[in-house]
Image (cartoon, rainbow, N blue to C red; front, side, top):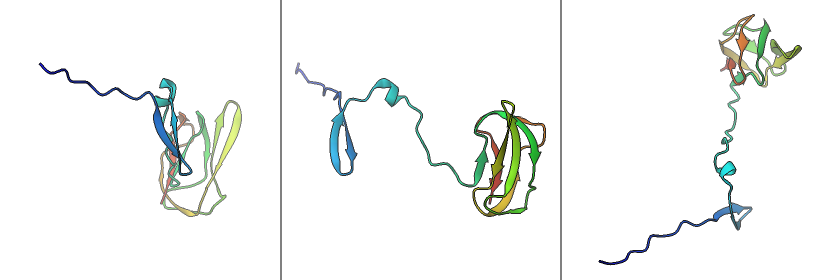
Length: 110
């Protein structure tokens, strides 16, 4: 019977930063972190849980960058949400009085 060696796992990970290769040890916490993804510009999501106070737009309406879209209350503060770009409202997923969690898609732009 032949003794086969199993390859050892390297404790270090190679990372390229500005064309320079580094060897580093990554912690378990780092490996289990939530990955970052570029946000979709066409989705307006809530950044904090709250209650919808006023909705200024309807489906099919044209909006311009900087135009007020929604006001919602969170922690006794009124938060105003503005359009980040010009577009058409594709979908309105909230109505006045709705309690929304963090990360809920409130408005979809076209």
